[in-house]
Image 1: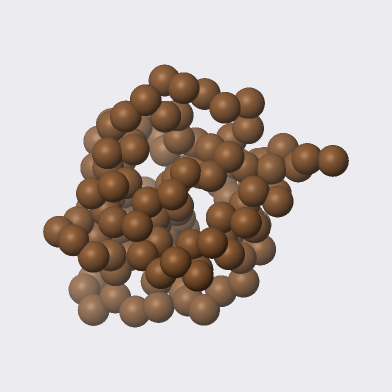
Image 2: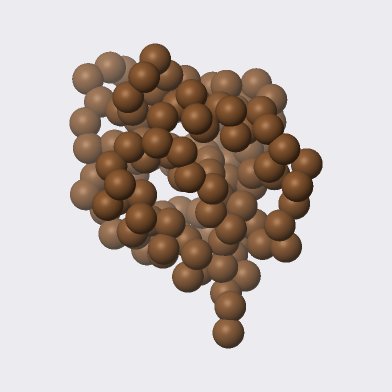
Length: 127
């Protein structure tokens, strides 16, 4: 697995503006950010050669795999991977993996950094 010197966060979000804002906030907080816009892209990254320390996923995603499914697939392979879900609305019952966090939209990008820290994941801020 390729390991960055910084903690890596996989951000799964289909709205480009939100993806960019959250990625910038996480970069500023010292995280290495990987991005996916569908559940299928996220699973490909998780099954690939990149190390991932935290999964941040929207629940409603285009394609066949929603955020619940992404987290479930991630935990099959990485049983202790921290997960943060974000959603504005989900019509189906929550299927959170154990020890995960759910953040409702709209949210401040700084809330994601705070939630990551609450899960024990900290960035390495650049000077």
